[in-house]
Each structure stands twice: as C-alpha cells, then as structure tokens.
Image (cartoon, rainbow, N blue to C red):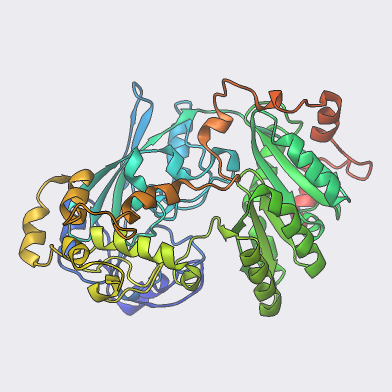
Length: 487
C-alpha cells in the first residue's frame, strides 16, 4: 500500500497525460484481497500499466488498484489454453509461451487485465482484438462477487474499461509460434495503393497491412512516398530475421516519432473499407499525416493544431466512423451516442449498482437516479434496483457467482410484455459483434477451408511484383543501423 504523496504522483496520470488525484494505491495479490478492497472502498480505479491515451485509469480522489502482484501463468498442454492473472504483461506472457513453442498473437504494450478492459487490437491486425482470444474471464464485480464469464458473455467486461469490476484472471486461446516475415510496397499514387490493398486482402496468411502517408514514411526512414508494410505469418516476405525484428520495432513505436515531431494529438476512426480511401484523400488535402491498420479498417491521423483536428472529427462523423483502438475513457465520453449510453448504463447497474468502479469513464453517471429514463417502466427500475443493502453484498460475495445467474436475478422483466427498453440486453451482444466490414475474426488468418482468392482471380505476376516491390533509390537494407539512428 502507498499513501505518501511522493509515492502517488505516478498514479495520478496515465499515457493520456490527463491528471487526477490518487488518495491511495493498493497492490492485491489474491482474489480475496481484491474482494476486501471492493468491500472497504467506494471510489476505485483498476490499473495495469496505464498505457491508454484517453484517461481510462486517471483517478478522481480514488483508490488505485495496481494489479501487478497478481502474476501467475499456467499453461494446459492438453487444451492449449493459458490461465493468466490480470497483472501479467502481454510481453512477459509471450516470452514464456515462446519458450514452449506457443504465442498469444496480440502484440501490444500493457497487462492482460488492461488489454481486456480496453479490448485492445493486436499490432498484427489480422489477429483482431484480444476479445477474440478469450475463453473465460474471472472478475470481481462492484458487489464484491467473483464472477466467471464464458466466451459468449465477455462483452460485458471486455471493452468496458474497468467500469463493471476488476478483472483478476483470464483463460486465453493460444497458437503455435510462427516465424513471420515482411515485404514493403511503395508508390506515389494513392489510387495504385488502394488497388494493391484490394488485392492483398485476398491473400492468405497476411496478418498486417500497415499504411503510411508520405510524411510519416519519411520519418520512418523510407522514401517520401506511400508505403504499405505487409507482414506474413509465414516466410513469404523478403524481410526476415533481425531485419524483420528491427522493422517491427519501428512500427510498434511509430507514434513516438509523431509525438517527437510535434504531433501530440491523434484519432482512431474505424471505417467501412469502401470509405477509407475517401477519408485518406481528405487527410491528404488537409495535409494531415497518418498511418492505418488496413486489416481492421482503422486510420490514425495525427495533429499539431486543434483546428485541423476538429475538421477531421467532423469528417469522421460524416463517414460514420467509430472509435477503433484507443477506447473512450474520460477524453472521448462526450462522443458516446445515446443508445450506447443506455447500453453502458444498463450493464453498469447490473454489475456495479453502488457505482464503485472507475466512475466517470465511458459515460457520466453519479447516482442510481442517472440510470432511470422516462421511457423505462417502473418495473424495469425495480428489477435493476433490487440489490441495495450492504448486508446483501457481504453475504453474496461468498464463492463464485455464475454470470447467467446474475442476469436472471437482476435483470429479469417483471412482466412478460416486451418493450424496446427491455430488448436492450439482447441488443448489447449484437452491438458487440459489430457489422463493419473492417472487423476481423481470428479464423481469417488461421484455418480457411475456402480460399477467398476463389472469389476474384488473382494475377500472380502482379502479386509477386507488389509483394517484393523495391525502387532503385531503396537499396539500403531495412536493418541498416544508419537508418535506425536517424530516428
């Protein structure tokens, strides 16, 4: 436990650089300790490494729960599932998995708990978000109950940014470790770039298509052209071994180059594929540099001034873009639509009726009264409000509570007549699944029984030229130390 002012300073903020006040920091090492913390505190902020940039773990006179002491890892060779505590970093997990020939292909900075809370996508977008790899989650909700959620129910935890409880462990699917390779395509013509992207989307085994604008490319040490970094989960690419590792290190830290050059603000719209080109052309006209994860359909524009940023945000709205990677936190909760607010409030009250967990993130909700809506019938409020006494919390926290039981107990309609409000629960799962064509499922890059290449004939000669394209001015090895020193 830390409660001295000088010990608390680093917990007052996260990578968003927004600042709050941590009144105390606690370090639970067991599930029972997490329960005790929830029983004895009102204003709690769960924290991993604080890698988010939207203020999702900035305290507000809060007790910060640092999960780093919950760090056990257990791998089951029979089921190929790994049980991992919330405080384990994803990097540490993959180092241990690699030693036995496996990997969790979610490449991102942060802890398991933080990654699940934010539903982070992998650097290799072809492997989708961490939610796709979850088999089971254990978490302690705002009532102090240990709850197990199966794969089909994790949408009420994954991506809710710690507002429904504290994740204590997860059971994750893993795959056999795969040596990867890369190739780079470059062009001065944005039309050619998108022609190539359409072709690349047909290729099996591509787990990254990372687009860079000419300015961004130049910062990375490439010629001032458009570039697509293409990563394969096999040896198809030309860049391998140490050169591949160096390239991926550059890609992983590409945002730091933008910050270093004065681009301190960024957005992350997820768009339908057919709208991405229009958006990129708009960014070019605005002289806004960008990168893009074309597997997931997310573009990352960077800004030096607020005027440019606001113009781009307006365009994102016109194109119906949604937050793609960074989350909501404090910084972007004003953009949450009314229907989403209703869904979030309903889930929040189901798991955290006393409003203990990460209050002020995702949406503003200061009391139970905030949940009530003029369109919600009396019986609906009674159904959600039937847990009100501290005595119930203490008694119900003994043992593990099944998630379906929680749903039945706290959200069962008081009469059988359906209304739009009573259908919100079933709608939550549909919303979580998403309908954007940019969505990626892990099956897309693992085992396909039918090749997508059958749908549109692929010109193999063209593909060979694309995947291994290199201009005469690019004879330097991608692993050249001189190029690395420029950055």
